[in-house]
Length: 587
Image 1 (cartoon, rainbow, N blue to C red):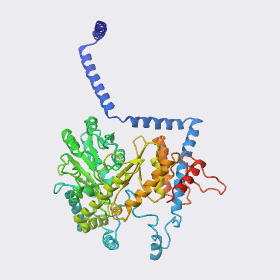
Image 2 (cartoon, helix red, strand yellow):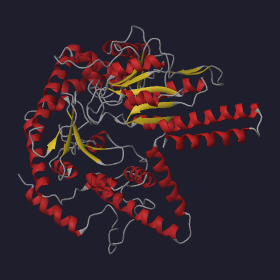
Image 3 (cartoon, one colour):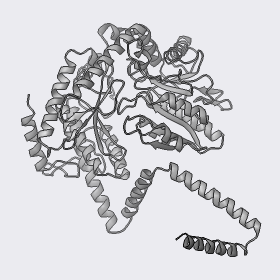
Image 4 (spheres, rainbow, N blue to C red):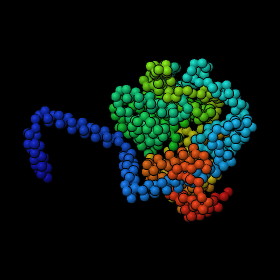
């Protein structure tokens, strides 16, 4: 056998030699060099390219191409539009119903409304909101004295603008806030930072800083993240035209896979990002190991602490030992942290902080503009000084001791909720969530979307989770200070959750309604091209007044006109099952 292989190899070598005799040595050397480079490029492409994205691109391109064909194209377009319209009409009906008590204003009134009329408009602004029922939406509520204090501060600062130096106190308070957040996260004295309007903007500004720095060095920027990272990074990569490389998390821990991330690194990698904690599962990524990796390859490491920064900062003093996830970790070059979450400030308040030696900056500098020197710390130009003033007021009014107390209550409730959820047969908590988030998954045969829908009927709002391929992964609930200070929260939530699980277990054919139903349809594979139509239509629905035609979605129907039935609308069988479910789910 070996002799046969040897003869084959010998003959192959002779054939190659005879073929190469026809070419000059220079041509052979150049050809070999080019071949090696092509192989290197192919290996890099194979290592880093997102095959899922390739599949999505091919599907979307095929759909758009078919739509342009005669006969078949119009039929496909009509079919897609029917399915999209079916979903959006259901959403529109719910939204119109929720807004029905207010008379829409289509244009600016000629005579301004009186103070009484204005106050009447806002009388029921919170009527649909049930305190303590929402997950990851509202993180605090103010008592009367606190509200009056913030109203007073807002009225004094509403027209101030930190771009101009005519309000030195506003500029001073912004610098104080940056220093306060740097101190909480073990940053260096004098290290830079900026205030933004929210976590998504902080993340966008961080990515922008590193992407623009990479382009200065003639690189095609690539951002490497675990696939549990917040969707704000997808937004940032799209806006900045940078390549986002998502690495699957460790299947056992739900944390970033450090080895897999290192394999994805190339000369074009401009940053690595991780979470503290991740929004879906409440897992703090292995930041110490990622910091070592960042130092080894001289790549910036960004920590997204938007969700948990104001918990991790006080956890140790509250009696909880969490893994290091701030500037105390060597290799961390920037951190985003939201004050309007667990910092409990009014909405529209977040910070992006850098290490002192970080070479990247989000600052915009234009010294040669015809309007004069123009410098801003971020993309924003004019900003409201009231955001700075009210954020400063809340942080300084509460003080560190109050935050420590709140953190202890939240983490205590978080542990208690995890324990109670794991006692319910049919569901379980995946991984080992460390902060505030309680992810819940169901065992095979139990529809987690039905559980989520039933919780919604009882007034609870949960966040639906799904895998990158749109397979439902259950849902999560985010514990806040509102829940920690709410009497009988744990008892009430567990009671409703237990009953919902019991119903889903006994009725495996039951279908979810509303948004959970939409997630169920997404599981079957809705191309991104169609999802774009749904998303754009959804924004049109929520930003268009009732009774106004929305082309392609809604026109004022005739009384005899039947409602459009689409891919996402209920069938008679669905309605029957829903009624059975509601009859059984009374307690």
